[in-house]
Amino acid sequence: AAQMAKIMDGLPDVVLVISAQRKIISVNKAATKMLNYQDHELHGKLVDDLIQGPDRDRFIESVISYWNSSRKDSAVKNSINIVALTKSKNEIHIDLTGSVIDLGGTEVVLISLRDVSARIANEKLLIEQKQALARASRLASLGEMAGGVAHEINTPLTTIMLYAGKIKNVMTENVMDFEKIDLYSDRIISNSDRVAKIVKGLRTFARDGTRD
Image (cartoon, rainbow, N blue to C red):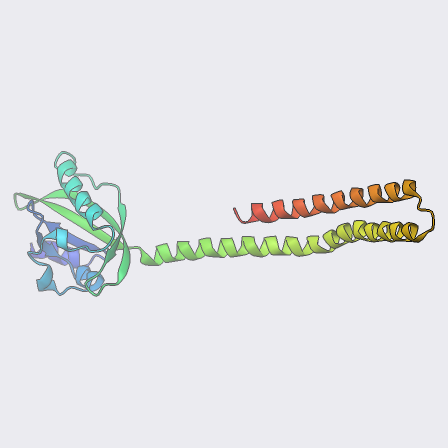
């Protein structure tokens, strides 16, 4: 037992030895450091009460699952990621694994907890950085488009103003030329449609960008 305790204390991850009644029999030094409990607070504690937070029920279910499945297969099971609160209410991300072992003729569950909070934080930061780069890239593309779009819109607007002026001039004449008014009106409508299509394209571009 002393040799096992020495081995456990040398491990960087939290190691819990749990009885069939789901009580903690033994822990290593890493457990007190990660979970902020004193050694004597953990011994004899019901493992159900060890982990608080949003994934408490998943933790309990996992321990039961390890016990039930590992009695037939002692191999270490795939890890499960849970979010937990320490005694001091700090939120941490934990990878949980477990298996059944024979300890002096008694079957117990050996639970390993690894704090992966730094890894999760780095992954989240990486995602945020990628999203920021995507937004910056889109803004850069939009900036490059701005000059061309300004030209595309300015040209039909200039044409519209030109023909609106021509219509105004025709209407000041003593005898109005309705054929010219009709022609100039068609030119205005045509160029207005051109502007509308450009604006529609920009709206589609902006809408698609919000989905990235």
